[in-house]
Length: 473
Image (cartoon, rainbow, N blue to C red; front, side):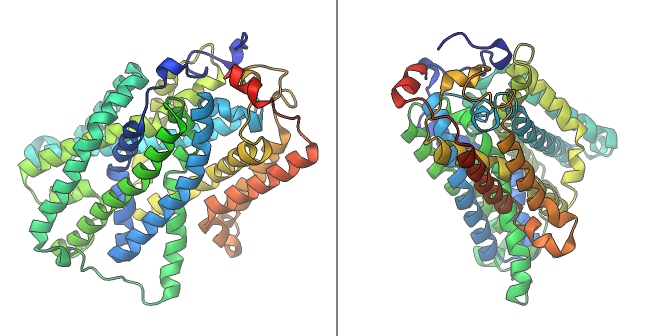
């Protein structure tokens, strides 16, 4: 590739060379198992029980949501594997080499929120372990905050070690968490008496209307949960050995891992209703309720490994690249990771996890209305406008195919603004609240359709011929 514009590139943003494309089927399967088997996935399922669903309704809701989000995720993954480019570079094709910063920062801010949430969960897990093993120490509120900051610093150390440390962490974490999730299920089953008793909590809905009123926004939340990765999955597939390695690894890893682990969350939460008279959706609180130091210690170690896995993989890789994209000459992957960590602290994650309503209907559904339109524009641009052919060289240059108007594609900005506006208008206008319940879907299709229509009317320049693209990739 010819000399690139230094304001648009650094070592972390350039296409991944062939010698670094070492991720195979197992790595992508392990990636999803390690990211799914963690506390917020558990709480995603357990909160449905707390909201009144029975175990069958909760399993179907989770599985359907993940099968839906798998579609845009695999579509966006294609460009990363084909060209070796990360998300903030790929997004330059529809938004422009400068306009891409807007979409990248939307994704980055959401990731910062998730980083803070996972750090808070890790800190509370350490604190809960102390509360069982050393109650006198844990009684102080300052100890909770110290545990939170300690776990936050541990994440920062892994970030500083780079992407390969993430690969090694997840290769170990995936099988470890699979074993620990099975152990938790068996242990709670022994406490409850039988699987029949564990899953005996009935649905609290007395009519189909009552169920659907919770089902549809919950389904949107399930999609919104991985809407972040549906955007920045090229940050991982750029390291793939082949298209088949990443596509089959993800198609197997995501639905299977989520189905298995959310069943654990659903079964254990249902069992808590039998054992304690009410559903305890927070596993850290549940483990502490048994007052057994050995069990608490082992369970909290598992929680820490799981939380560290997903926090680094899902909530650091993307925003680190996104912030680096803002000013490549000054902001590296490591610096971007540090920015992510500090913004995660500033977003007060303890408030986002205060209740099931705040977690599902506030956080998950709310940000899905921001990211759905970006995903719609990405998919529409890559497959419908460009037919999967990109001019890689122009992605790193001004005055090229993707410079548009001073580096910004106004059609993408308009489609994004309208997509977000329509998806979130239900927050302000109660009669249109149903649009908010379907925020991700509304934003995805509205923005995607508008973008294609405007690009077709504008008759964009024809992409490079496949042979030229292959030479530059």
